[in-house]
Image (cartoon, rainbow, N blue to C red; front, side, top):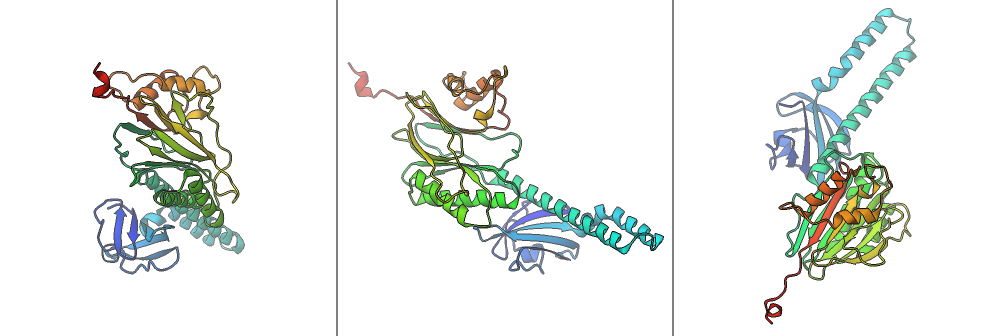
Length: 366
């Protein structure tokens, strides 16, 4: 059995997630830690598990949910890296009074700080990895007449990036893309709070700009977040081919074929900085056979010959017809790779492709 495990517990008892996926749905207090009080504040405690093994449990509530994140580590595994320091301390005591008591205290304090920092970093790393794996939708909404595809970064990005798609009751598709500009717990709380606020706004039927303002207000007034979040939020109307959206610090959508006079430009500012932040709003119409590309990191790249990134050349790649049986997204990524685009590995791309128009039977009869 692994010396470490991570659990997500609903309320006080029910296990929603564990690393081995063998305890989901069971009672946490009976199967794992009978003596752990999840009503207490976030903490780390040493106690015995249901197998009477010595373990250390670290737990904290997940903001905005009734869930608690619990990280469990066996005491023997936790202290294995500190044994050399224990031997060093024993040698120092043998020497006697040559080492002042204050020096020993400083050594122990520094070691404790290092251990706490390492434990926190490992716990954050596990949580962030889980967010990247579990929170994005596992499948795209199925919409008649549309091809919706996504390319997520193959390597874990340095910044937390979270996309979300939701099919609404009126037939529209909600699309959101959030990018955290900070790290640590505060950055994770900020991006999760923004995601929850935008989902609630979509279900309430708010316009994109109003949804962005609501999420911005939430982040500005909640002192637990403290980290700006860049955001794109919008609705796709499949019947009319319209995508209405609002931006705060994110790259604008790319349309192919492009509308005359429309020059995409990045929106200034981010959520969580100023209460009076005004998002950039827009509306694009995707023609039959056309496509809309929502991305993060794509416009920051360069071509293999080193020229500056240009929207016009990217739009040329969007206009390339799919090769054979390849999908539009596969053809786009292959064309960008052939041209040496530098940020494909770290780029997020969501492609909304509209099917070509089909002439009615009446129109085909002379």
